[in-house]
Length: 89
Ligand SMILES: [Zn+2]
Image (cartoon, rainbow, N blue to C red; front, side, top):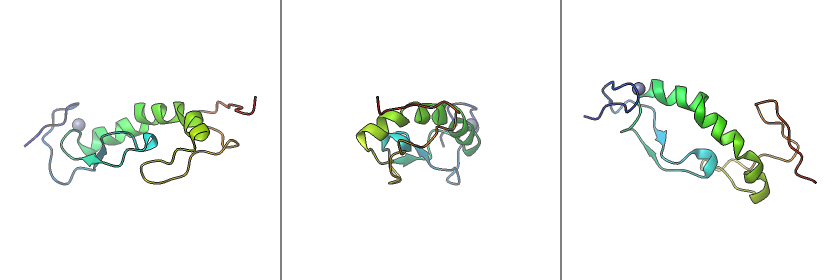
């Protein structure tokens, strides 16, 4: 049985699936063999979220759907960070 690469707890088949490539990058494949659900949630609310938000303007320009088939952020959608960007100029 594998252990979580971050906290070293033993993993089970009940772990929340972790995207191998971020959903925001179009990733669809998941694994339960790397992170426990607790660490997966922490990563999802922290660095994964920050990384996904940082590429949101590029997703908009490329009209790139997420792995879960959500449409690209709109030009008028404000990022969760509170920052704003204007892609019209
Ligand atoms: Zn863990």
